Image 1: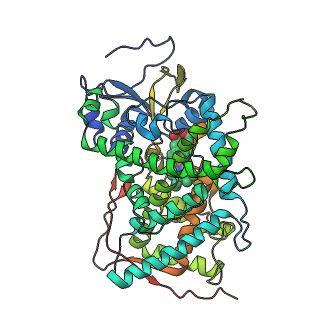
Image 2 (image 1 turned 90 degrees about the vertical axis):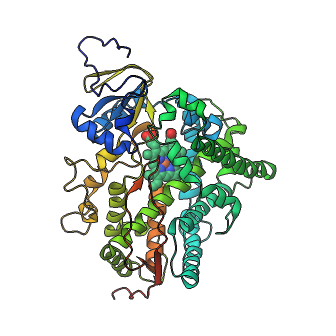
Image 3 (image 1 turned 30 degrees about the vertical axis):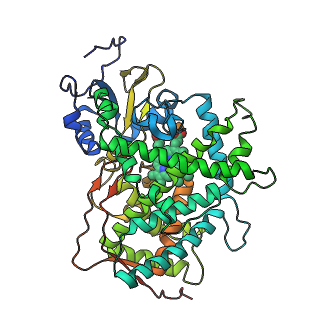
Length: 490
Ligand code: HEM
């Protein structure tokens, strides 16, 4: 291994030495969130682990991560040039490509303002207060009908398959003003293949660190490339139709809005996002928007059937504060602290995004007294923070109450802020507000009407499959029954 020159007064990064050529790849293994959390107990919050011959900086501990991503945000905001990421959106993704300069910033701002305009914007339809509410409520109505139909026909179902279409329809409505049926093959062939993406694009995939593996062209690599290509073509067709029908006076969705905004220069950076690159931004929003939220909802439904008493408490809270006469709204969030605490506990306990997208250092820097060179790949271990015994009492227990104040009536803001799922700082998720709103609206709308369970005698396997987002093994044994909620208390 090369030895780095460490400037005087600074410490060398600690970590396992590893074997020649493969480094610590075997110890990191198939569940890096677990193995790297274990290793951090030995080497600390700032450690260096060789994957192949590449040294990777692994950050743990909430305070250390805040120091790096917030207070020293500029030093840690880069993205590494990894093999897998070069295949996402033809290497032009705002989220995954190595660019973190002015062009990235201009594109990120464009995405943020497009999301603000089309998700949080008030709905022209007076029955809902925001477009997001309108889209979710329409999708839940169809989803609920579909699940009840499947129950009549087959008495059980696998939830991911249905959730993913509903969630994809919400982001699709926002992005392109379009929705698809539950049997639409064009959409299904993409959204049902997202596991291939998640596994390949995960932090620590040996392909990214051992060049020889890149030449072997494994089946999973072939499938990953095909998935990305198919996804891009699907979006290119939609974006093309938008170009053809574009009119400045009729901006109805994010794609039109991006086309419109891309024609103006950003006031501060004077950078214009070329119109040909719009499809890559749509790719980022649609890709990040359907898979993460669907995963969050599948985990939520699974916890609800594993802990039926928690499901009952959420339904009582909905009955008391919303009733059955009207649909849940985003403004109800403050009325349903237990439901909010449940969602927060799902994020913490599942930590289904165990590492953020990999970062890299943009210059030589120092963290906690350790010298860190420029261009070093950085893994941010969110899973470790969410299971850290020094932050959480009995971290492996699933207890929504840990997010409530002592009287149980309000959310405990301090506890909520310790959960790490959306990253922090300059690369923090741009869809967080939408994602949180969407998960809340989907869950409350579904639970207002339906009770979820698993077939008697079936034990749900809660072991996640490692990936960029971690998923549960699909379970075919879910069931729903219609509820007849009580009227709200007079
Ligand atoms: C980035 C989490 C939903 C758009 C990220 C990152 C995380 C994350 C951990 C990486 C942060 C980093 O690298 O430090 C989540 C979770 C979601 C969710 C847990 C749902 C529960 C969404 C949605 C959208 C979205 C709904 C869009 C509508 C993005 C984009 C980035 C990103 C564009 C890249 C930002 C950049 O590189 O500058 N998200 N996300 N996400 N997310 Fe999300």
